[in-house]
Length: 231
Image (cartoon, rainbow, N blue to C red; front, side, top):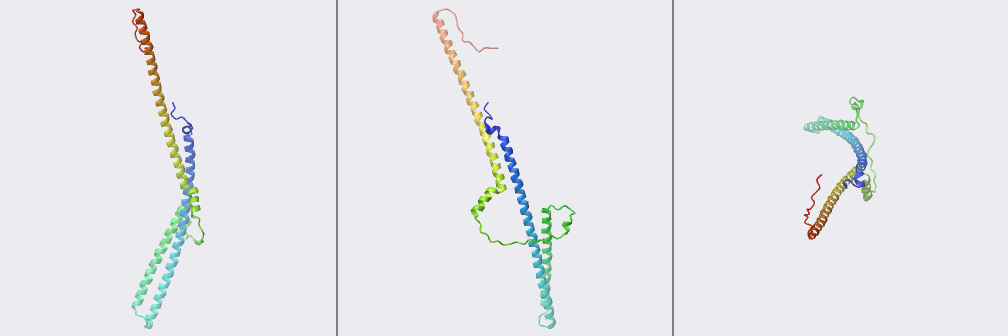
């Protein structure tokens, strides 16, 4: 009878739906933030890979210059021929570094294109990505406590977690209300059983009193205790 009684139980689905809506918005915001962060990180990876290609190419140029210089020194007799071999090995090593850096650059560009959801066959897959923005260093004073407080208040993943916790607490409260209602029904049932037992005891006392009175009167009539009525 009292199971499911109360406003908490009756509004459970409405509150859960509202919280689920807030969770969906927070999850969408969190997914958007992660995507933007991934794209930004992929862009900086492309920039770093391009810088590595430039540095590797400079190192190759230096190795080639050293090889040419050693050849001239060997021609004039101021350097042992073995130095040419060592310089050639250095050039070969730097060529290998350039090839590896260019492959890394292509991989990072492809990763950025994938995050940008470029469709297959798009000319963008054949074009080089130009990195125009450069990293800037800007010294700032950071209030750590204020930054943590802002993050705790506005981070979408924490908002989603808080709403999920609210849902769990609501479900727990409703379950507790159900148990309370069941306990009340059980206590009410015991009360009704006790009332019936008391009424039966009172009827028996009345029956015994009437029987004894009848016996004292000597009417010779035999009274029987009334049994349960059969329909």
